[in-house]
Image 1 (cartoon, rainbow, N blue to C red):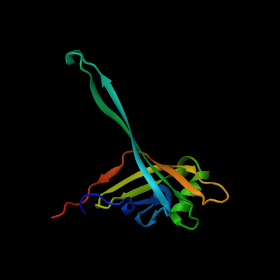
Image 2 (cartoon, rainbow, N blue to C red):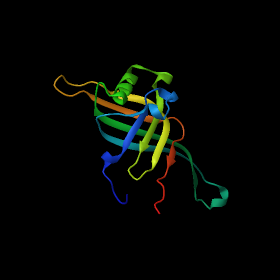
Image 3 (tube, rainbow, N blue to C red):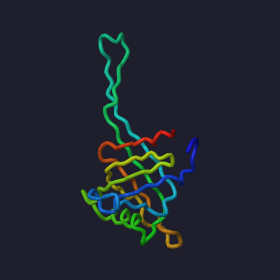
Length: 147
C-alpha cells in the first residue's frame, strides 16, 4: 500500500486480561470514532563554555498518549474492558495495546487506561472517551519492505 490511507483502516487492540494478555486476548474496542496520538518530549539544554554562546540540547524523556473517543457499546469485549477501568485504580488500569497501521507497521506498548467520559444526556448515546498512556517505551515495527 502506498500513499495516504483512510484512518478507519487502522486498528487499536487492547489486552482484555491486563498486562498478562496474550495475543489471543487482544481485542478491538468497538464504536470508536476518533483518535489522536500525542507526544510529550523532555529536553535538557546547556550552554558549554566551548560553544561560543550557542546552547546544546539533548532529548532526555518521551511520553506518548493515544486518545480515543467514541460510543459505549455494551457487550463488546474491548469496549466493556475499557469502560470497567473507569471504576478501577492502580495496577488494575494497566494493560497492553497494539496499533496496526494499514501499511503493515505496528506499535505495541504497555499502557495505563485513563477513562475520561462514560456518561451523557438521557436522549444521547453514551460516549466512551479514554487515554492509553504509554507505560515505558513503545515498540514500533515498520512495515516489511515490498520487493
